Amino acid sequence: MSRIGLKPIEIPSGVEVNVGDKNLVHVKGPKGELTQKLDGEMTINIEDNVISISRPSEDKHHKSIHGLTRTLLANMIDGVTEGYKKTLLIEGTGYRASKSGNKLVMNLGFSHPIEMEEPEGITVEVPDAHTIVVSGIDKQLVGSFTAKIRDHRKPEPYKGKGVRYSDEYVRRKVGKTGK
Image 1 (cartoon, rainbow, N blue to C red):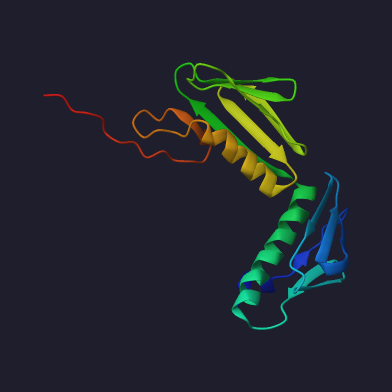
Image 2 (image 1 turned 90 degrees about the horizontal axis):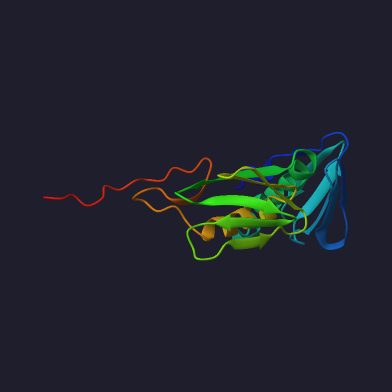
């Protein structure tokens, strides 16, 4: 039984949710608009500013999709009201980031700077040379772009150099011991 799928979703004031054919959901709020096609077998009911999702049967596939559908819809509503933000920290001698136009420029110990253009719907801020803040209304897009930035230089376990999430703990190893 899906416990997450059974939870109702309350629609906050200022947010419009429209469900179209084959569960094409359109959510409009103060921060923007999101559209996503959810699983067509799930039934989405909107009554008195509360969304409930039900599944057609107790089949294993339907049980697994039930909670996913509810979570995706709740993330869309959270995104248009509050938005999502992830913070990256850069550690290492000479490692730094800067912003030029809509491009993120990072020096991560390679012979060349890495330039990444921010995708549509994403805002990248660089408050200082060792911090990158990625924000937007689509949780999946924010997470995937942040992961792409981190993939250029993952934190290494000996000195902790690299790009890491602000809440990530890098487990340190002891280096060589001399005689």
